Length: 236
Image 1 (cartoon, one colour):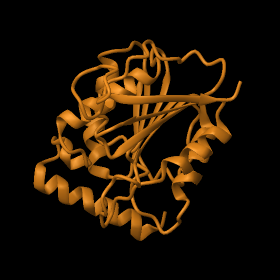
Image 2 (cartoon, helix red, strand yellow; image 1 turned 30 degrees about the horizontal axis):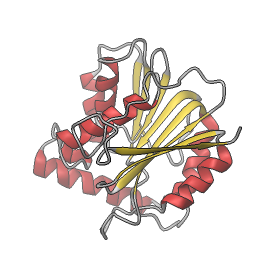
Image 3 (cartoon, helix red, strand yellow; image 1 turned 90 degrees about the horizontal axis):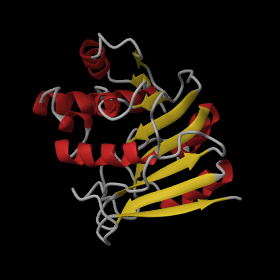
């Protein structure tokens, strides 16, 4: 990603901070607190985070860390974000937590540590002059992921035109995921404009505790038609 593109993203979030305040989920790009909560429910259901080394790329204020700490034990968390205000807020908020660290960096070019679970929630949704930037990043991140990679993307078929944000074709991303990982799941909602791809390595100990996954567009956790559609794929 070019320097001007990174600067545009930082400016976008600084404008949202000025409008909503740093503590508001909308400053991070969420539609609101409820939208964030539902996405975190989906992420937490996708893997067993107990004792895991978690790498959160595009971590914002590390709200996901707080969510995971309430539900799992022994999470070792590293958050990376390129917006300095978000990283400063995360460092202040979790200064007392010995198993956490935060880095202000562009994860597209910064060295990435090997991790058990990697989460990329929305951070690949920005426009980039390189048409296959998101695919190259998924390859790069998968190379350091030893257990489960959870990637949330905007759906090119459903997300409306936006000057900064952009959706990616589901088939294109799934084709790449299935070429890299032995086990892949596609999670999407009938009413949503995003989707989540979960890539797993065989023999990992981070299988989800439960197969029940909360819908990011519905407060209910259910297998009803309005809930998420989970499509498992993979090689034997």
